[in-house]
Image (tube, rainbow, N blue to C red):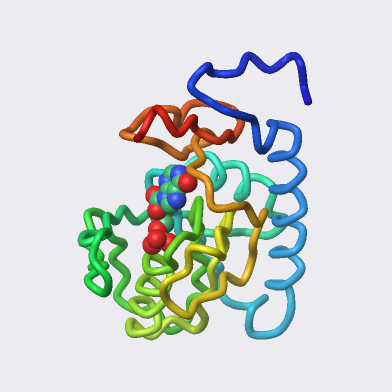
Length: 190
Ligand code: IMP
Ligand code: MG
């Protein structure tokens, strides 16, 4: 563990240090750059869409490491009915407005994939709008929590079913500014 880290006392443990996050984003940007190099992927615009707010740190690190031109876009969504079984409805608070999506390769960039509802619904939305391709990139994946059949195309790290904060991720809007990701002490939210 990096002893230089000044760890927030609300955290139980640090899961990913700034250095590990840097390594993960470098590896992912290299992979994505390579995958969007050839043929129909290479010749069309790559639009990377940040799913606000949680993905913001990951997104800005990732796009800066891409070795090809990318267009930057942002969506902001909240999901309602989280406690109920099948009513995980998505409300769009910020959208992008393009007249024609048919030439675009869309890459959704999310902080964490939990039930899978957010990314599967956003994927469907951009497919319905006629995008040439739609893929998803998530920094963290909690596969144990999945409620819908969904697998992100790019995964930074698979994590256990714990509530994590930092590097964009929040609990009640707190901890987003931490430069690392840690497990929140259960007594903070229970
Ligand atoms: P999904 O639609 O259930 O996959 O929702 C994913 C969203 O839930 C993420 O974008 C986060 O906003 C939130 N979320 C899920 N797990 C965590 C966590 O451990 N910490 C912080 N936010 C989380
Ligand atoms: Mg989020």
